[in-house]
Amino acid sequence: MTAPTATRILIVEDHPTMREAMRLVLEGEGFEIDEAADGQLALERIRLEPPALLFLDLNIPGTSGADVLHAVKADPTTASVRVIVVTATGEEGRAAAMRLGADEYFTKPFSPTALLRTVERVLAAGGPPEA
Image 1 (cartoon, helix red, strand yellow):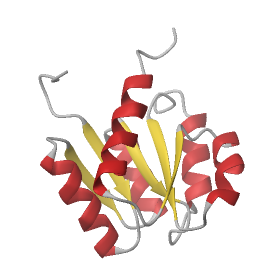
Image 2 (image 1 turned 60 degrees about the horizontal axis):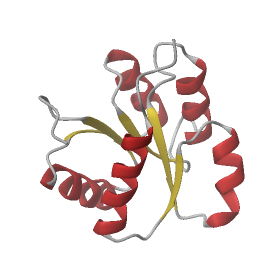
Image 3 (image 1 turned 30 degrees about the vertical axis):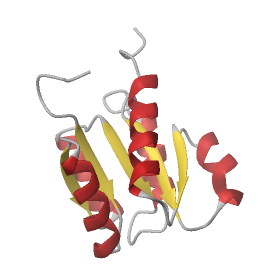
Image 4 (image 1 turned 90 degrees about the vertical axis):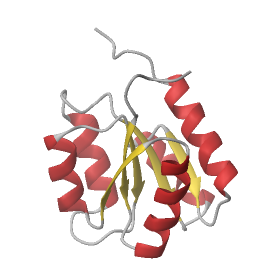
């Protein structure tokens, strides 16, 4: 399944090395990548040009990842953005993230293969927004 234009993904992660690793894997598969190191910048980028998918670390400076997730899902113009929460916290945070509206919960560290499978699964699950 190849889209006429690259699917845009925003990576919200405060650790530059982790952002770079994710960007390299995803760009290698043809995705268009944007990045934000904190919650405020993430919200600005999302409102300016909503991505198809958002990788969101919950532990980011400024506006928390949980607040970013809530804002994205509460706004009708961005509610259809698919969100994968990426965290080093472990499985104990899964239920809370899913209650906030996350589409998937992904723990660090991870393999490039697991990252791509998760992206494919979440994007395949998202159809056109409900009317």
